[in-house]
Length: 299
Image (cartoon, rainbow, N blue to C red; front, top):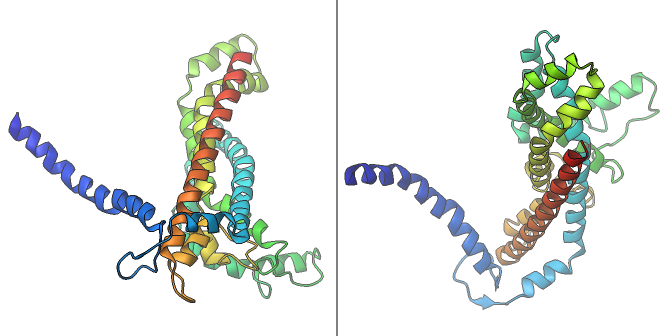
């Protein structure tokens, strides 16, 4: 028994070491760094207490990035989650032929490197010779090219649309997994009783999918609050911080290419934002649970 236990610990050890070195240690040290004015090199000497947190709270650029993150999250959840359910129901239909091909097409953007997607989208939405402008000009919907990514009015909208398209396939797969786990005998019994497609969706599909839907909403919201690579590749937070996100804000201070890096301040901003994300997740989770409970009780 002892030999078997030792073998178990031996197999667990690499994962445990990786967790301690690359997860737990950085988390603990980020809290330590947040109380110092430190550029990432040399010993920790300038203790500043809560000064980094106070500066974060009073920085309008941070709150602008937070607002953009929140807008991105709300639009993505409201648009993507129900639309993915509709597509999943179509792909799950018995009458649809070649559903595996359609699933692969929808899921392809998910496995495509985000940095590559961002660079390609910069050309597609480019002001001159961009695919979007070329199509709209030929259709007569535009009189002159529009700088979609370079305009304050449209840059965030474009980033949100690309973000919805990029992660759409994952939400669709979640819904498909939920739909395929539903008991078929319940649907058959309801059809015998004379239920039509609308009745089946309203009184069977929706109540049974609520637990899965709650998880999908939570995952979509939390993931949308951490968008870095797409924005970095597409706009780098511009123009004039119109598409700036908190992850990108933290990155600029931690790995600044202009001036001295401020790892301590970036750590404080990351901790503050992490707490905010946790609170948003808890509130959203409570709201989804309450709404789900009421819907289930109502049906």
